[in-house]
Image 1 (tube, rainbow, N blue to C red):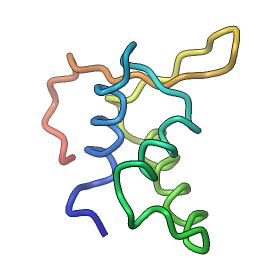
Image 2 (image 1 turned 45 degrees about the horizontal axis):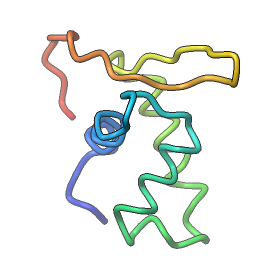
Image 3 (image 1 turned 120 degrees about the horizontal axis):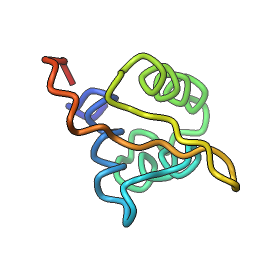
Image 4 (image 1 turned 60 degrees about the vertical axis):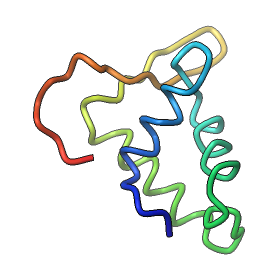
Length: 84
């Protein structure tokens, strides 16, 4: 398992994207592309649930509705101390 929290990996995925916003499936794809651990199909439901959970509870992640569906962004101005 990667030595990073889910929140920090999601943040990195969003920040590395060209427009600093990603759909949920694009976040999943980033995880698979960057960490071999997430390529195990048998375990996919577990880690995908953890990604969705972190997106919903961490206030630094903001869901934005678009014409093509929702994307997630990172609110870097959220200065509260949070463990990522």
